[in-house]
Amino acid sequence: MNITSSAMVIGVADAAASSRFFNAHLGFHEVIVRTGFVALGREDAAVDIYLMEDRPRANVTVSFAVTGIAAEHARLRREGANITAPLRQEPWGEWVLQLTDPNGVVVQLVEWLPPAAFPVKDPR
Image (cartoon, rainbow, N blue to C red):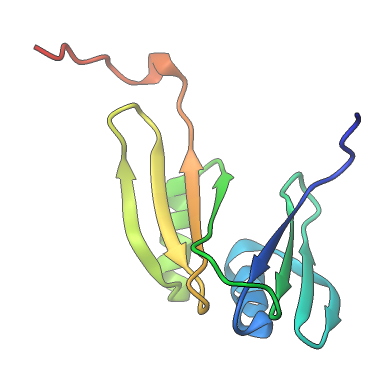
C-alpha cells in the first residue's frame, strides 16, 4: 500500500464557520464548497480537512506540529483567536497551545524539542 495523501473528516454544525476559522487563523484555503460541505487544503504537508454538516459530531482534536510556536501564539492573540489553553511547556519538553473553533473543534499546536534541548529531572 502506498498512501498518497490524507484527510480528516470532521462533523460540524456549521461548516462555513469552521472554514472561516481554519482560513483566518491556520492558513487553510477552501478547495471545494458545497451546501453542508467544505474541503480545506494547504500548500504544505498538512492534512486536508473535510467539514461535513451531515456527519455525527464527536470531540475532535486536530494537532499540528509547527515551528516558531511563540510567534504563532502572539499572532493568534493579536487576531483574537479563541485560545483555550495558553502556551505552556510540558514536562517532557514540548511546547503546546490549544485553540477552539466555533463548532468546538480543538486545534493543538505543538513544537517538539529534541530530547537534548531540555534537562532530565531526577524524579527523587
